[in-house]
Length: 401
Image (cartoon, rainbow, N blue to C red; front, side, top):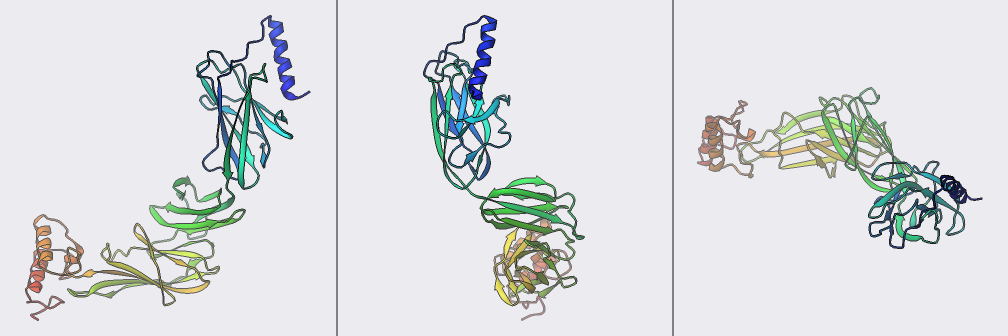
């Protein structure tokens, strides 16, 4: 005897003992629909089957929801069926299908009153990638012929494993870390996720610092490991790597102003270090230098003397390293001419006026307006810029030119 028949028999006994006739099945008119998650994928997925009895004047008595387990579908150890609106649990069974050969997942409902609907949510397992047709048959407990069927076709995407670790300087999990994967935050220094195969964006914040986002690729059935090293920003290079062994060589980081700049030459600041990348896959992130005015005309990078394309993430410049070994990395921050308070690339009377206005407003002014190098933007700086524009000062704001 099938489970469905056994359950029906037990309920019939209860009705007879109570001396009540079995309820009449709902008239045709209730509807059924199936919804699959947008990220339908290999592995466990929560499906929704909605039984819509809003157009009927008769209660739908204890509907049975049958979902055939065919075409790469199976049931997990606990499908955990619930009613969406109430989270009330429902009984279930896996047994011979009444629709096709093989098994079906059966979810046993309760009355759906006339004018109402119920959405049953449960888990099915998708065993392989590809297009899947999911079917559902719904019928009243006492009238299996009064059934309504629905189906939907969805494509299951493959998945892979994504692991993210945030380590402190000692190589231990960093405290207070938050890992963000595709915009979703996860508290903690360790994340292990099954994700859809393809590209994903990973970023980390820890200790008040936000580290650069890293775009990673996860292969179907594969595993991608991302390790962030949280170190002191006193050493301006921070490694973000797919290999926990990648690091900046101890004592290798150097930073300096390489061009002080003047009224015709842009100021330049360089950070250089050696990156030790055993497997040739890493991203280095360099924090904006505190000793150099922020907001740059340009930021350039080289790796072993070859031009590289830097990225920007907030106050950090990133460079991808794609070859193994001890790599010489240099990042140059290109500023503006000294005196270019408006940052338009030239020094003229407009800059003098901007500096004077900042002084009058007791404003700090733009740091490029500090042409005499005393650490403050003052009326003297405005005067020197005006004199340069009038041809009475050299580009270094010295004597007459």
